[in-house]
Length: 81
Image 1 (cartoon, rainbow, N blue to C red):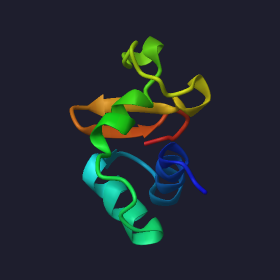
Image 2 (cartoon, one colour):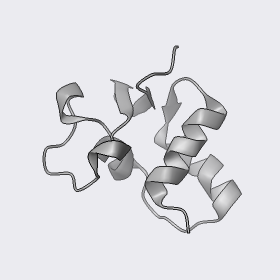
Image 3 (tube, rainbow, N blue to C red):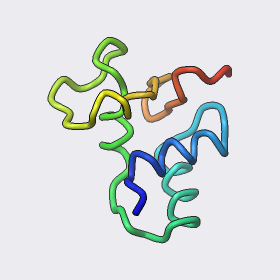
């Protein structure tokens, strides 16, 4: 079974570039169904602390692969805009 973090990363790889939580939620829900209610918090939790991410997040470091571009917009760290 896929985790929400894995589904989010897959969505970013498929969609590319900068995405909002709603765009990611729409893609994931279309592919996997409405398994998860919230995408805003997981996206924020997937930002590394060094890039301004939450220190209290329980998301493992290997899933902290997003960068917050502006409020509510994220991209993969190694993704060119």
